[in-house]
Length: 230
Image 1 (cartoon, one colour):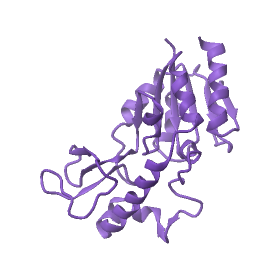
Image 2 (cartoon, rainbow, N blue to C red):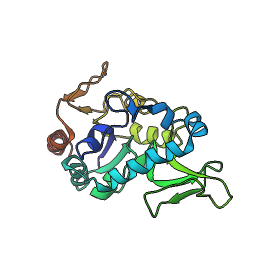
Image 3 (spheres, rainbow, N blue to C red):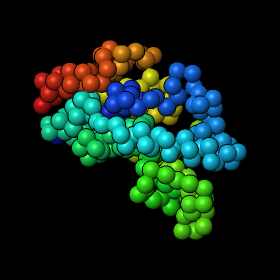
C-alpha cells in the first residue's frame, strides 16, 4: 500500500473556526504570544499562561472537523495515511484519522512542569494553579513552547522519508523544525502544497501548488492521488 504523509498547520483548523495561534498581530489580549508560549513566560506569569490555554481548550472543544479533515480520513481507505500536525487540537482524531503525530503537543493533555514524562489526559478544560502532578509539581499544558525541543521530530522525519506523496496543508512553512520536513522526502516524492497563500518552497522537481483552502484543496489532491498511485 502506498503511503501518504500530510503535514498540517493552522490553516486547516482555521476553517473549523479556530483562530490561528499567532493571529494577525501576534497578540492575545495585549500580550505577546511569546509571553504565553515560552518557558520564560510561564516562569513570569503561570496564571496568565494557564488562562490562555484554558480558553483555547474551550474553543477547540466547540469546533468541529471540516471537509479537509474528512478528506484525509477518506484517503486512508486507499492509502496508508500518516498525519504530522503542528496543531494542538484534536480535530484530526475526532474526524477519524488513526495515525496522527502532534509535533507541538496536545491541548487536551497536561504534564508535570518538572517531569516531562508525566503526562495526563484532561477530564476538564481547566488547568489551574495548585493542580499538581503525582510528584507534587504544578501541571502545565502539554505543549511544545518556543525554545523547547520537539520530542517527536525524529519520528516525523522517518515518516517523511518513507512517503510516496507528501502533502503540506494550511501551513506557511515558516515554523521550524516542522518546515524542514519537506527536505527529508525522497527526491522523486511528489509534494503538494495546499494553501491559498503559496509558501516559499522551490528546488523540487515534483512540486505542485494548489492555491485553495483545505476544505476544497485536499479533496482535489486526493482525487489526483487515487488516479496516479492506486
